[in-house]
Length: 224
DNA sequence: ACGGGTGAACGTCTTACGTCA
DNA sequence: TTTGACGTAAGACGTTCACCC
Image (tube, rainbow, N blue to C red):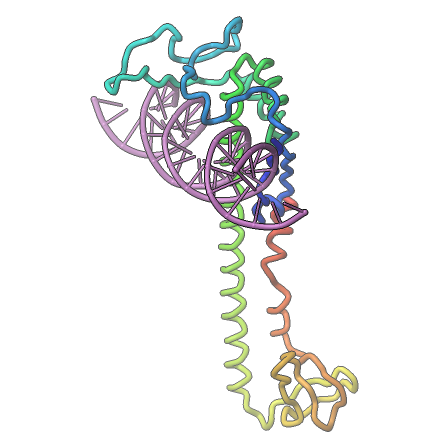
């Protein structure tokens, strides 16, 4: 059965995560549901080398208070982690054959490889979210500062009040009386009525505010 | 001894796909 | 041929808990 991955989140897209479609499940891998009867902490048959590194002994079969066998914590060896990371860099999801092969190579069960990839994807996403959160905070701070500056500017201009306020015409480089200007409500551009023909952006520092957008942020994140 | 962090493992939900009536 | 119900597989997500510092 071919199950395409669900649409990637925007975060994944911005950082360029690639996920390959799963191949038809021909390997008899039981997935998350079918493995409940297997002891996840047992070394695969024929396995067991110095790389197999768990802090709990495999022969510990004591019963837990709720009847089932106690959950043991597997610690992956450095080599196992390195190989998994390397594989994750190439692909964030594994098809059943890749999973099987990797599990064989690592002397782990396919289920363990699968779980590792699930957790790794989750950690990756969390990290990405944290980065984006950090970026948005900085962006907010910068906008706040810009807003403060602009408000100060407005106050100063109001305080000046030396005759009618003027702006500089980009065409004639002559000062224009503000009374000749009007704001187009649709495109939010300043137009002149008589003295200066054609729509103009007002020649003021305040136009810089419109240049920042969240898209800059995703681009910035991509470059990291 | 104790608490917090880490990460492997788990349970549940959602989604996509195949099959069949 | 189309459609809706149903089963299955796989990933996302939240949580649990063993282990370490």
